[in-house]
Image (tube, rainbow, N blue to C red; front, side):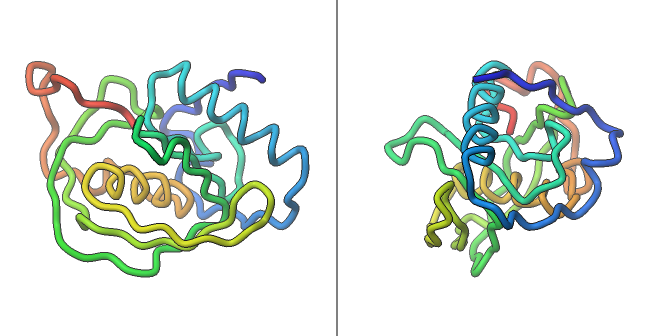
Length: 161
């Protein structure tokens, strides 16, 4: 697999709504594998296609839990509830972290690499990571949701999405 270059803000691709995926083929599978390798290389817990310069609705999340890597192609949020506030970072904004309030629960519908539709429910940190990546696919950056930026000494254990 190949590690891709992370696109940094203010690249235009980061602020546009991505196109839906229409072909579920080997090229898509290769891209997902590359995205995973890239996310791991840069020590992230999520990565969206626009973060490597690709204008397609593809994102992955892996928070080191029993679910493993979640591949989301053409994801949509079906329902959210509750509220959580916590620190977020982003691979496209190195060394920038802020407090963001998001729903504590999310239910999504998406497709896997083979084109099979699935639904997934998540809470807490996983819900946060999923929503952060889906925001990327809609051209929404976490910086638009920050209530306050965090200083380095407030960051112990914060991971970038």
